[in-house]
Image 1 (cartoon, one colour):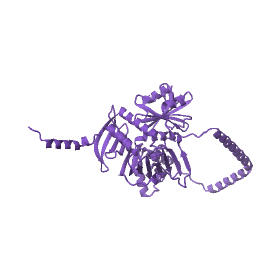
Image 2: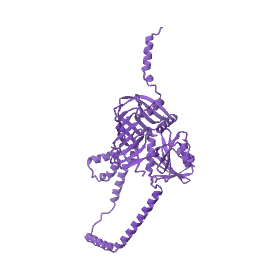
Image 3: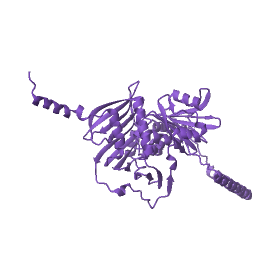
Image 4: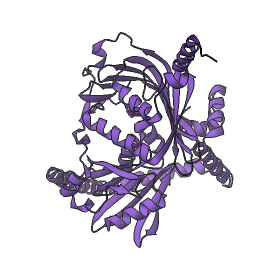
Length: 332
Length: 151
């Protein structure tokens, strides 16, 4: 039978307009686009962000403004103790003004090349350590792709992202506990893209009632190898722990330094500080790899403190038993 | 209603001294907050313990005995007034010396010690990258909520 060319053209048009063809982004590409869209789209929205602690929810609501390139503002509306607080990122620095305390904390921008590098590193770790699946859905009357990042072995969802198909903005996020319950979340209650925004929204103006200014210059992240030359007490700590968690860098903190470990989503921090602050009353003494440590757990956050050769260490985060053992072994 | 507000009102709630809307709000909060429910349990325990104390019967000369005791204390006070002044002066001197030494130490090195909460906040800030990035308020909320456990 002779094929009708008109029929073939129809098939071709249908194939091109089908969802599979029109949305060719594989999950990893989509994640890359979503990560880099953060400072590439202007919008105004109202966001609800929360965390479940000890079985109940703590959350805040804020109005968010984003302007291309690299400008961000958040105005807190709820709860009452945060209402009136403002965060401004002007692309160079971040100003967090706490109105009731009449205090401003100034930190480097989150749009710096160092932060971008950190994000890229986290993405690489996500691809390495997790499974990524996607599905199409609707959120806030917009077409979105829902990305679910799951544990490779147990296939448990760890993080879910609702990504806008048109702008790649992440409209909703959910982070899950090991038992599968939502641990942290954030979502836009409303969002409007490409609004007309006044540049003055993103300029920090010192209020007359300001009492305290804290500049946190020590936010700069030092690569592990460089930090190990400066601080010999952390020289034996490897860059990878259990082939999953990688040290993303070292930062200065009050009374010492902190090493930041992440597997892309889960994380823990190792502090080398002097002195160790008073530990919570529930801290109990344990022996790990023949070493005396103090361990406690508050909600989902584990903590251990130990000393080695007059140096004090404190680890805080999601600390599985094998991570604790490895850390103590390595620092020996 | 938030935990700190509930805790402040718990005793009045137990004594039924609150308006109905507050009672309702606290009751709802207690239905899911184990920490505040435990606090209420403690208040109940204290009250039940107080029930064991015997009620004191006041005798007919109670008032005059009290005034007599007060007069005696006043006389003793006058006798030791000079000694008390000397002791106070010595104590203040020691305190001034202590603060002076402390200031010298502070000049030679920072002795301010952050609490564990400072380091927990660092963790919440870092781990919240995927959710609470650019939302420092969440770290404050978390550390306030955990503040009861970690000072």
